[in-house]
Length: 292
Ligand code: C2E
Ligand code: MG
Ligand code: MG
Ligand code: MG
Image (cartoon, rainbow, N blue to C red):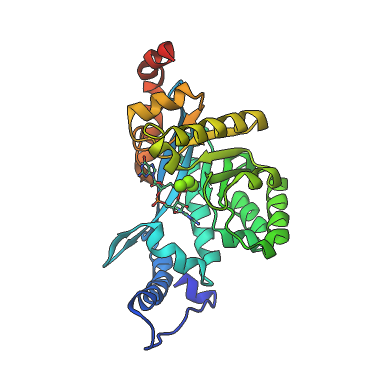
């Protein structure tokens, strides 16, 4: 396959390994074939919407592996192995290509929202990553401003300098940066002061609990205020209910993403989903605006 031609290697089987690491090695070997197969690595896409108007404001690419025998695998099942291997670079290239191709599709229908791509923390320590991004944009003749890179900062302190350098060079290309899973783990307040971002995405865990727990609601409110003061977009993740949506509107959150609005869907369905969101936008949201 393509990966083999690039001279990539994966670990070899070691009889002393436990079942799960053996499984990850088997997956890596199979991933090389998946690159060649063309239809195994696919993206699902999920719009983000303006909470007041309901209009799509962006669309996030979420990778899936349609494995011939294991069925559809979600990122959590194979990304950890990819990120530890030399396959990360060709994998990232494939995801960028698929995402930019999808964005070209909806642009052709007059919908010009940007596409968001999740970036592995390890790519942020790769000095060649900014060039990989600009080359992908050039291949697709896409302006940098149409691409949002979602980052979570989970790198060791010792690698901070290289990460800051990579992020500065990414910014210089004109791509947008988004701080994903904001409020959790490494995506915290200190990141906002160090990394110049265009967007923060409030982690789903706070949205999950905001109706029942005052503290979670306070975190959401704080994040919305912080984003407003910094002049960055704020997106809430994982909205599943109309109650969560109303609570977010009451807190002044401008936009959101979640099953309540649209589930992640295959690339060939996304143009229709985006234009439906656009058409139905004001009609469904006007009553909430009047109340809020
Ligand atoms: P994320 O970037 O925070 O993406 C949001 C996750 O929440 C996605 O899971 C999405 O399917 C799910 N989700 C969206 N709306 C809802 C909702 O209303 N309720 C619930 N319960 N879940 C919702 P998914 O697709 O399994 O992705 C998991 C993580 O894998 C992502 O978290 C992201 O960090 C990573 N990931 C996904 N695609 C890629 C990729 O192409 N490259 C890299 N490096 N990481 C990726
Ligand atoms: Mg994300
Ligand atoms: Mg997220
Ligand atoms: Mg999350």
